[in-house]
Image 1 (spheres, rainbow, N blue to C red):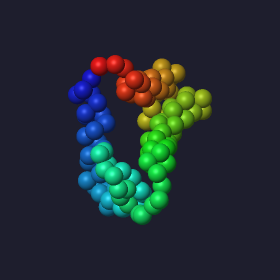
Image 2: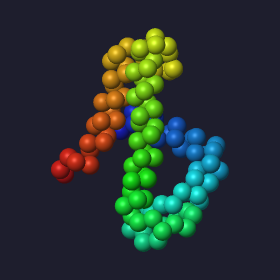
Image 3: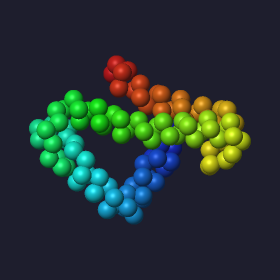
Image 4: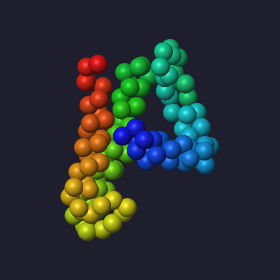
Length: 109
């Protein structure tokens, strides 16, 4: 599972970020954010509290997940192929993966 996750998710992400590093640097410079353990927000100067930054982070994280679900189930309904299986099982699989990934922090260690 680790190997599959690396080769299907992490490695392509690294390759894209190397090609489009400017975009990611621009996002890093513009969006206000905190690094773990940091006290001062980075990016554009803001008076937003940590709570607001956390909500912004969660929102930005959930947008691609929502798009994945919409495309997966939409392609099944419309019988179109966007690189995702047209079967219902092919649409449920990414949804289950996203759900499991979202629940992982709640599982006691």
